[in-house]
Image 1: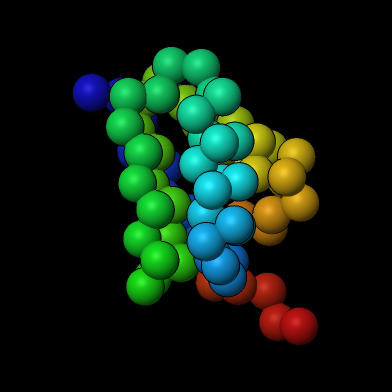
Image 2: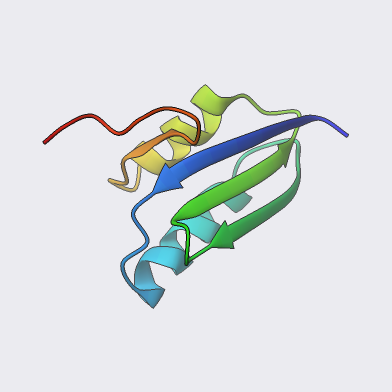
Length: 74
């Protein structure tokens, strides 16, 4: 099994989730992915880096931060 990338992402509606899943599926070398709507958490495993997943989500205008990192104050 490869790396496990866990990110905080705003999951507001079904459409957001569809866009996120579509973006994640385009990343090369992923093994599994999961979206936890209750925790606003995206989990991706495979030969990927946190930066790769964040970049893929930024392309669809989604802000993502590593799960263990505190959110920046508004």
